[in-house]
Image (cartoon, rainbow, N blue to C red; front, top):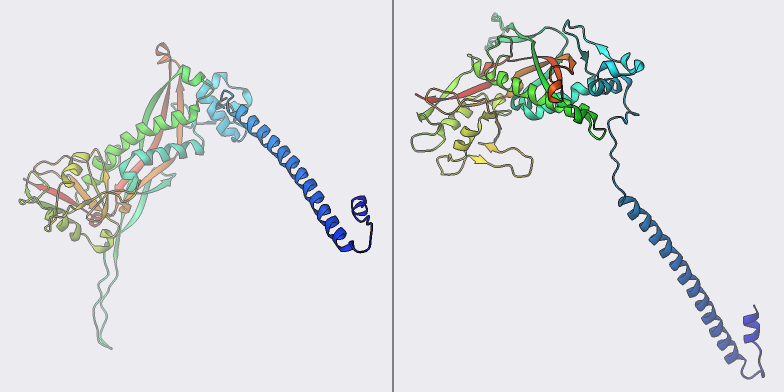
Amino acid sequence: MHILNNALEIKGEDDTDSVVTKALADLQKTVDDRLKAVETKAAANDNVKLVERLDAIETKLNRPAILKGDNDNKELSPERKAFKSFLKYGVERMPGEETKSLVVSDDTRGGYLAPAEFQTEIIKNIVQLSPVRQAARVGSTASASVILPKRTGTPTASWVGETEARNETGSTYGQVEIPVNESACYVDVSLQLLEDAAVNVESEVAFDLAEEFARLEAVAFVNGDGFKKPTGIMTDAGIPFTVSGSAATIADADGTADGLINLMYALKPQYRANGVWMANGTTIAQVRRLKDSTKQYIWQPGLQAGEPATLLGRPIIEAPDMPDTAAGTFPIIFGDFSRYRIFDRVGMSILRDPYSQATSGKVRFHARRRVGGANTQAEAFRKLKVSA
């Protein structure tokens, strides 16, 4: 309080008020100056610390990136860790404790069962590559075939009087059996890729296998004859069709799309509400040029990125294996694809072959999986037939 004491030294009683006022003003100025000095020093310290932190972050970011390879398996299950080692090194070069975690296939051709996560990744990739899978109803099974009940007759109701006899109105049912067929493929991976610690070999092999399986099954789901393969949607003889308006083209004689409109509304409302179009790229190119009777394009692009384009308000899937437009062909199909059933057989075996492609510096991976597919409701679809 020496500041205040010095300020209060007065020479006379007459100027007491002015002296006190001046002393308080001097005191306020002194306090403000010291607070300002403290704040300035603190801000300077904070700025120094902030600059030091930014420099440290920049130094860290400028360091060469160190990629973690697929040896970083701390969070993987023992089975998946062992499977990744199997893909990379082969069972002969694996540690004994990892070999015990591999599940041996019961197939006489040998190989090891892929872990569930690996199979899930393959199926996820197949869905992105296989057009029919995108819309079909997919399930899994552990059996050699799947038997589904099918209603073959609908109940018949009638109006009756109070005491009149009632007729039988029961439905009739049958069965649809979908056999599960085996598919096999192989992919070749270079030794250098396997030796590169920065490459996730498991993901590479999973995507390559998915690409091959998707190519194989995409053909079968569209045109498969059911012999050692799924029955394709286009080979179901029970699916009705609508004939296009002019020969050798999907358009009518005046270039409109009345044939497609008639096809769409020939389908029952419950199927039409979930309907999806399917055609190949060549046919889709023709469809995009079609107009309705009011000269409006029936094709509408997706309003947002990632949304499918629509044809008469319903999504359209491009399937390369659909027929081209020609006289007497069926280039377009429309319907509720959830009525086409796909069943994946659980379990996939992988056989590592380091010998057959050794002279090319590659390792070949053989994979087997089983899948079944068939249409379970013919009335849920309708095809467009080009006039002959």
